[in-house]
Length: 152
Length: 282
Figure 1 (cartoon, rainbow over the protein chains, first blue to last red):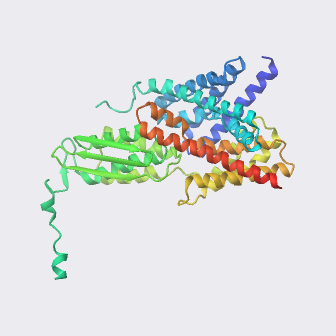
Figure 2 (figure 1 turned 90 degrees about the vertical axis):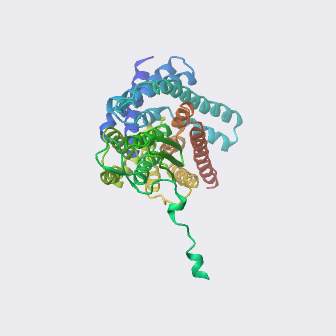
Figure 3 (figure 1 turned 180 degrees about the vertical axis):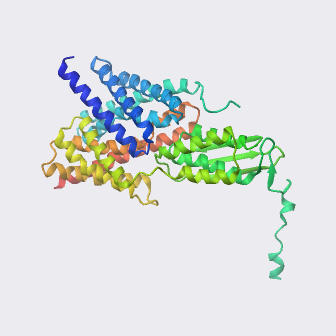
């Protein structure tokens, strides 16, 4: 990786961290959570971008990034004593396949069947990777202790 | 004759087999608890959490914890994304069922957090129901976030997502009106409108606006601007949480949410496709 690529990647990371943070305001997240959400989104994207750059498949790199994001959400929710959703949903936003969904749709409208299949496969792969990532961590997270509630 | 028929309603004592007094002193609490009101308040809290984006597991858990804290011996709580229901049994055998229909779910994480904190607080130390009612009202009052600020956020987020997906600064500027359109339509959405139909309408409008910015020469890449708009619409769909619910044992809720997420994605794609097709006519 040369320095231009690295700068580009870091710039994109900064952009998605800020965008996610702003989007979180739209989701009415309280102000005290915003720094951690921005950090989580940036981290998620950086992990995905690095893994993908060094030759990991689309499915696997999304999976690992989603795992990290979900784990981060579980940890932050326990630190800030807030519902997990507040952290885990925004942290996944950088992985959401908005781009490939658009190109799939555009290929379908344009009648480009080969393009449609390859873009559609990408979209499904990304969604599947995110799903597996979330599953593997949140199943474990369900067994972790939840502070704040007394055991009954 | 007619007047006799109006008097044939059976007296309530004949149809009930429990002690008819509504006020009960629950052991361990220093105040009396009206069981019926307690159940309806507990359902208000958990349904409020569901409406503002909580997972099903959290909704059911909160509901049964609150009822137990107020002295219920047994709680059967059930929830799917459009319904919250619970049957409670008190130590004296009195039982009651209440059902709450949830009509729309939106991401209101401030309300979710307030209600979650409230439920934790009252589970640790139950408070009288009048106070609880006032606290619920306070928790459901959203943070003061004016509409112009939210609109600005929508505008900035659309531009940010456009940049993220590889657009240049001119595309980001072109995404500004698209973000404004989507956020304003969402803020002033009529309550009665069908959610999916609304998604299609917003997508068509946003798509046409994207084509307009491209045709007027403002944007260099129409696709990047469109993706910026799509990203604003997409995260509202709950694909991630549907997976989580499926795997945590809430199969019905997970399936319903997943179908809804897929339908929303299809509606967004269809809306933008219509816009692209319409753009081809000009």
